[in-house]
Image (cartoon, rainbow, N blue to C red; front, side, top):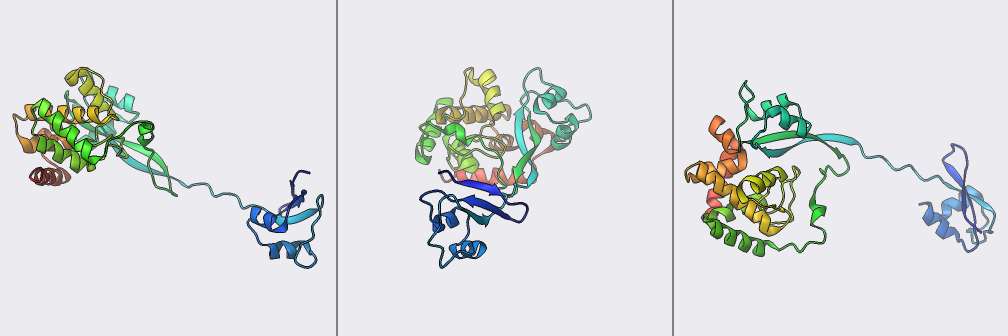
Amino acid sequence: MLALALTAGASGFTLYRIRSGDTLSAIAARYHTTVARLVALNHLRGNGNTIYAGSTLRVPRPAPKAKPTPVWKTVTSTYIVRPGDSLYAIAARQHVKPTVIAKRNHLPRSLMVIIGQRLAIPHRVRVTATTGRVPSGAHLFAGRAVPGPTAVASIIRSTARRWGIDERLALAIAWQESGFNQRWVSPTQAVGAMQIEPYTATFLSTYIVHRHLDVYDAHDNATAGVALLSVLLRETHGNRTKAIAGYYQGLASVQAHGMYRDTKSYVANVLALRNRF
């Protein structure tokens, strides 16, 4: 005989049809109540040891699950301007108003953007009040063999040597960005130890490395970060401080507006870390 839950109006209770093998304690557990309460609700004799299949019991109606309260947060991704880009084209692809991007990046009235410029793109993201977490791409590591911090540091060190880049500087940036955690995905979807945005990877793949870069792969992630650092050092004529600032804020922004307060802190931290490697 099957168990049935029958609606009992709006009283806050449901009628439950007892099936063969049921016990009062099992029913109480199923409906998140106690045996004593079921005995009282149904005027059962004794302690309710005797119940019969086919008869009905009044049981508490399950409380509806509270729906998570939708809230919105602003998270920022980074976009590197590519040849042929305009602010309006970038805004259309990012589903953000051009004026919002212009204001966030202190662009000139002409709204001109420069190839290689790192633009901060503010996004309104829906999250839940119960967790406060922004959707992450970390699940894309599923099924991959992801190296630990020591192995990641070794990969970055060897990659920097191949590119002729100061390996201590590359290690310092990676530690500042992620603590050598290849699995780390930021709320803005920057991936891995070098914290590479997908748009940055696309730019580097097309114009610098000339092959596809999978930023979820530790070797490709290191290649992307070191390649970007190489470009920044070349553009700043080897000025380490400006290159570090460019990695964080975007070189065009640094050149146009100087280093922001948080950029100065970032640079100081990276330089201090470099001396430890």
